Length: 314
Image 1 (cartoon, rainbow, N blue to C red):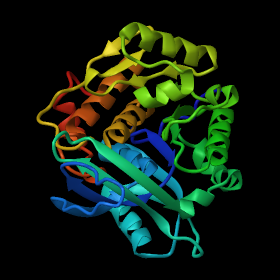
Image 2 (cartoon, rainbow, N blue to C red):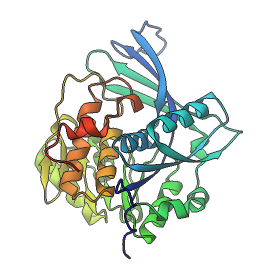
Image 3 (cartoon, rainbow, N blue to C red):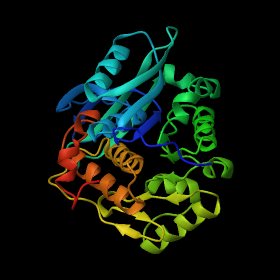
Image 4 (tube, one colour):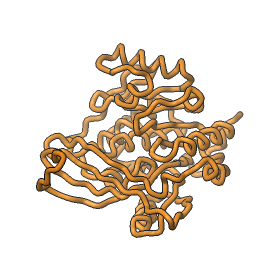
């Protein structure tokens, strides 16, 4: 089946199925022990959720982006709509007044910038295959369809099926980490696990490049198209291309949202016709800039910023 024609303005159409959550971010020297109360150094409230972050990253890079999700009827839902309006993301939202909009506890280690996160998806936890069917025309008109695993797996699975049937390029960011069926992996033109997620999918700990290569082969043998294994400060590995170095921009402030930045950059570049190597380079540059800033959605860079760290346009 042929791919959909590119949108007239050449921005590339990216459709993201996923979750919005309001991030409540706490910074401290360490996590408290059970039963302990301790003082932190700062607090921030802002937009988050992997799907939403990825949509914002793609839109800030100039993509024509649509976000598919469920929200409650509350202040956090208002935050979502305003955040997407500011970024240029088109919302296709189903409202659920019986549930709250998603929220997340985000702990950031002041010493390293690393994070630990608890997510309560709220209304988005009820996303279903029927919801994906209701968005079938939107998904089918995309250049790239991208989803994750913060919403129910059945919704992600159905979205991938609709996209595949329409000849749309599919990306699965398999986060949070879990094993998946070969049937689901076979629907993925690209799959973008980090080290933890790769271990969940293959059983391999990525302590060497040989093990990264082995894990990628396993994913391909199970049906995935192109595994793009993200390795943090080392970069990203792609079979037949090799290790693509990370983009180092400055001091790491916070790693929250770095994976989402990478996926948003990858999706936008692919939607605009970039080859896999170039698309991964765009993802690395997007992530490299994002970690120099605090926050998730707030850290996503603009097209001009990303292009300033690349040779040539994309």
